[in-house]
Image (cartoon, rainbow, N blue to C red; front, side):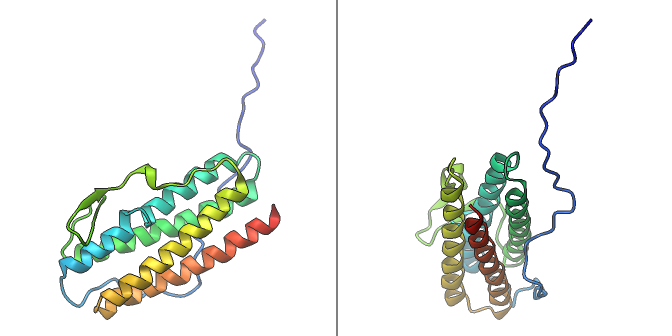
Length: 182
């Protein structure tokens, strides 16, 4: 008689995960006029070293690695990742409206182009270091958005960036709460 093998499964259910976002509406996704320079700045936010694409990938990686043992924490990380996906989508829309292209290449101010790479990620096996890296990445994103707001003279674009910053600040608060639990 053949012996049944016990399957290994992850008991953590991600049903009903919602994006971790501040309960405020987003401004309309629109631009005052096409501007490739602004599109290039946003390409860095989209897929540069400090970017929404990097944040999504890092959060999903972290969530995958801890969900089996730390389900509640993994759910928070996944909800943050979903919010970052929404940021990525909004930035992509703005880039296209500004006359830019979505090609996972950040256009630097010196004219160089850098394709997104997983080398941008901070991968740690230690949960506390993982969360600290996530907090630092959120702070870096806020600093970069604030710098880009100073460089962009389009109030429509800046309104979206300012709204994204509110979510990033909320993410820092959530991550700090998670750090208190470990």
